[in-house]
Length: 144
Image 1: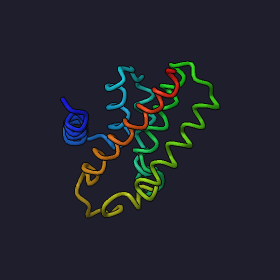
Image 2 (image 1 turned 90 degrees about the vertical axis):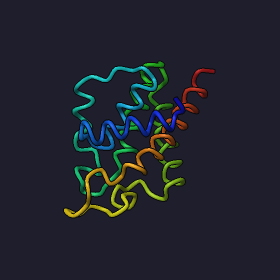
Image 3 (image 1 turned 45 degrees about the vertical axis):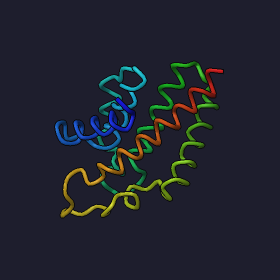
Image 4 (image 1 turned 120 degrees about the horizontal axis):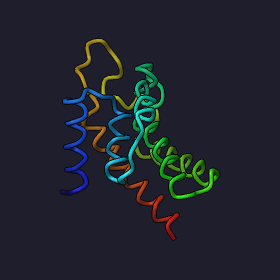
């Protein structure tokens, strides 16, 4: 299965079957892709990370990836400084690609009680593919 097909399938499953947010969906997809088991506490910690509990702040697709970089970096014995620098680089690249890190800006209609559920499904698929590409570069850089 192509990466985008895998991502689309998992996003649809996690959004519509499990009714979980973008940060948790992102974390779960990354953990499956890179075969890293996430504890219940990690999953629980992402509960309110969809724009800071729908406040519209930092996007959960950014937050989940930052968390995953820390998890993956520690597993690979990468220095804290290098992990932090990689998180900074990721945020810069994400913002350059999507023009913001803010959920309220990235979400097609912002937040309103009239929004349909899982409004960001298409954007989530695009962003998770971007996140995977960044992580592939991260792995390549630190495997050498």
